[in-house]
Length: 338
Image 1: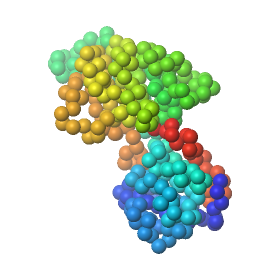
Image 2: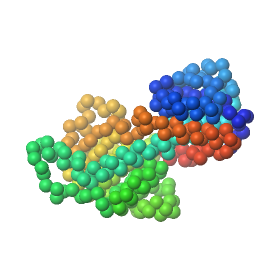
Image 3: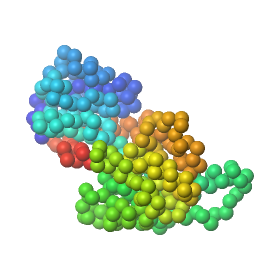
Image 4: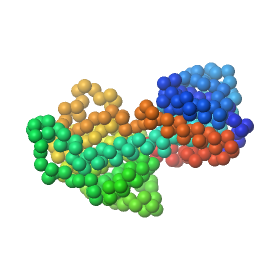
């Protein structure tokens, strides 16, 4: 843990005013100012770059919209020791210069991932109750279709593509419905799977072939996970399967997904993310009856963001007391976060 000069470290907060209200609110903001001495309260990165007290800043509180911490940016922050990021992924925020300077980076991903896990759990239950398809059929047929194509919520096989923080939170919730949870993640140890009571898929083909509902939680890493999910994999999903994507749109080959959904009206896709956002009006996803587009509602929105603010305050209290933060992210772990 890098040395902090005082019990109440000097801090800069870089947040758009509306986002600042969402993340902290009056009560948590008051708690933040008790934990640290806010010497620079900036609406954006430019305001920080010209702030007269930027050289004193030991702690940087950031969130979505913060510019990348390059060597040039860090040169203006010579006293910086800790970055507390009130958001999830830090991949766009940090650079090699951050790690080489030994700056501690804290992420609020654990709080950010909770609403995502709730969304996936809810959509999984709806899928197993056949709600997505059934609601459309009732409107189209003006009556009640039979229930013989509804799997029911208990004891079904649910697949997770990647088993990081969000995947593990989803698995915890799925155990409530006695789900047979199977996941694929080459970066996670067998012990972690065992502790979570989650089976390890042999490979992606095995995972897709077994999953009544399949949820995607893979981070987008250029050159590695782009179009990880191909048309061939999608065609392995069982009859009546549902695909859920709350990670990044580009993880799935979207053209191939459209082809498979056209070929297989029995399959359903719940897409909270897409490759292009917003989708162009010409996107073939819009007219497909077996697609639900929810437009980033899975992530933290409105009052849900207060949990990230509370996590940041708790971490800054620890830093002020000379303790190591609980949610620090290493350089290697940063590459694997969604």
